[in-house]
Amino acid sequence: MFKRLKEDIACVFERDPAARTTFEILFNYPGLHAVMLHRLNHRLWKANWKWLARTLSTLARWLTGIEIHPGATIGRRFFIDHGMGVVIGETAIVGDDCTIYHGVTLGGTTWQKGKRHPTLGNDVVVGAGAKVLGPIMIGNGARVGSNAVVVKPVPDGATVVGIPGRIVQVDSDYKEHHKQALRQKIFDAYGIPHESLDIDPIPHAVNNMLDDIQKICRTLKKLAHDEQLSIDLDCDKNRN
Image (tube, rainbow, N blue to C red; front, side):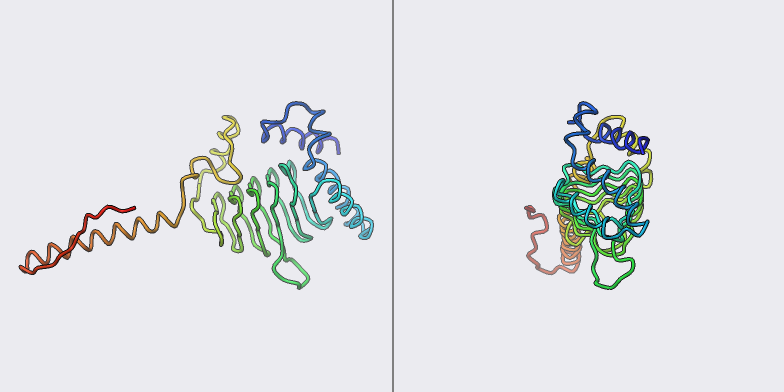
């Protein structure tokens, strides 16, 4: 028990530059309180003390603003930063070394019993306000950007943004890059790696389309010139 607590405190120091002392973390981090209470509630749930587990989890929600169903499976060194409004459903599974921010929902998309909530692999970051819905797998080392809505599986090392969630980057060497980021104190801003902040798939796609249109335009002008036809095309018009 104390080994787990030491790990949880150490991961706060790793991932939150505002953390200064162990005493401060123990008394002022509701994410840590929620995880500690969940470990107890999950044991009660597994021992078939389900009413007591649900009641204590409701009390934990009142105290921390974080709702974790006692049936959810949580891995080691799980860090909930800020935490207000976090909801983790009954059949959700969270791997080791994961980080989630305030307003995140790991929710279901059906009223049927059985596995209906997402599974997060190891070393996953889910940004503030993101919704990960359904019995889908979020691969190891994945990053889910703030306010994204993810309803499809995400491969290892991928970064997902937008509504619905779109993969904008896949890092095949994410393990080494994440270690470097920790050593250099580089902050994955709410699920978006710092080198990906300028990536937006829609403007990128539009720019590619405009490039193609310019190429077609120039080809038409060349053909018209070769055939001695008169075509008024402005292929070099500035783009906004």
